[in-house]
Length: 208
Image (cartoon, rainbow, N blue to C red; front, side, top):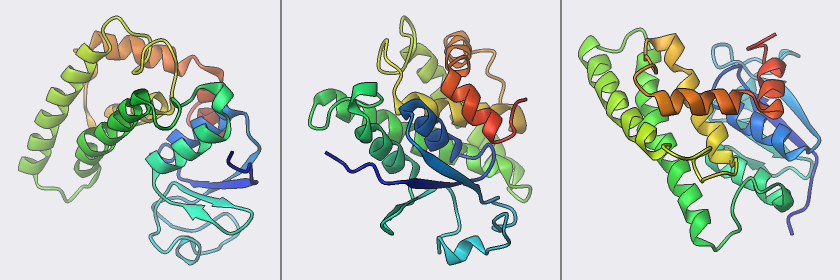
């Protein structure tokens, strides 16, 4: 069994680090959240974030024994495995666990990274058009996969749902309309209504 060390999550409001922030609230584990804005890379006390995480990006999770994790899909699975009774991830070694990893990989490579150029002002217009077209096709597929299901893995919320919610939340900032995907819209409403999601978003100042 994994040891429940005191954890510190470095995050930037609304960024992909919101996913492990949600996972920590869902898990009910004690943790400290430290803002590390992606624009300034400066912590509230003035510390240069690069001195803590040389990569300079979030999420970044540290344990009280000095160990750390710096990739969202790895972090959320670590959190889930600390509280197996919460069913935030299927058990290791099961086929369902690989399906969870499949979703985390898809969200990270096909959605997250496709959204990225839309946030960069200097991205060439043709590149943005191509990214938008790819996103639309991927979101259409996700919409079909959600048909008849409460969550990505069925009736149980998992850490993959937190990640999908966070990434699709970016649509409002870059002009990606989710209205054509009714299953996804309804799904997002279900996830947004969860107390842990609400708590994480409030903690990051995204909602009042």
